[in-house]
Image 1 (tube, rainbow, N blue to C red):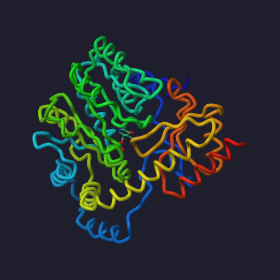
Image 2: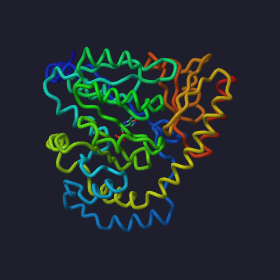
Image 3: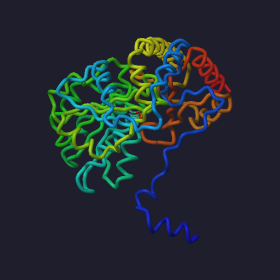
Length: 363
Ligand code: PMP
């Protein structure tokens, strides 16, 4: 081992050395259906208005550290109950990191059903926390409540993450199951509502019922992925503590101005969501027509499907060779063997994907 490599090994924590970096493939030139983005750009007149608004930005000054104007707009637009406070994040990834950094001791356990959003496990591992994944039911990816009850009892998790709807499976967990988890959990329960715009369901109105419930949101999937804005709603007692860890200027001035503007114009984004929902139904039906494909119903802006007779790695590669980039989940193993995930794109992109997939399956 070189001197530098051994220095790196001796100075850094073993859990960091053991991790693999979150991999983002180069997508230039592809029909990009891998990352749950809203594929639609803004109408020209909206872009012009936005650029005028950006003139307000003072790049020489630090941004408002408390995002007060933006917070007020978010509260109003997303029905945050009056008694809840907000924590702002540079994307919801950062919120997950802040919550986990605040936990007491290195013995704290983080629990989530799996498969789910990989960053819960990734960030917990990074911080040296114990992570427990509880397999979802095989047939429908619902919560396996016997397994959840047993795991909660055994591990007494400090935090449970529930993605609602779940990524990469696309389903909403049953409300009664979530309510039961909220009753029996000894610690925090974070409902990650990243895809709420496509599901129309939320626990936000129920925040006052459960003082250990936190509702996490992001504007990424609605159409603002490039701006990086996430937020967490919950009791002041929690938010005040998390806010001590948040770096003072984590939401930059361009993001603050642009997200305020986008929230004012949210009817445009909501109309785009409407188109995506129509296309989700179309894609679901068309995928269901392909033989050897098992397709799962989705409440999000992507669809998970399983290849029953083909090698998923090969199909993924051939789709990529034909210019279509989706997400290969087969390497994750477990419940995701044979699975691929496609984000709903624009109609033309969806058709290209379906055509390419049909060709690959037939070849
Ligand atoms: N939660 C879930 C369930 C997700 O799928 C994602 C993005 N893939 C995120 C959170 C993170 O979103 P962002 O950091 O863009 O806010």
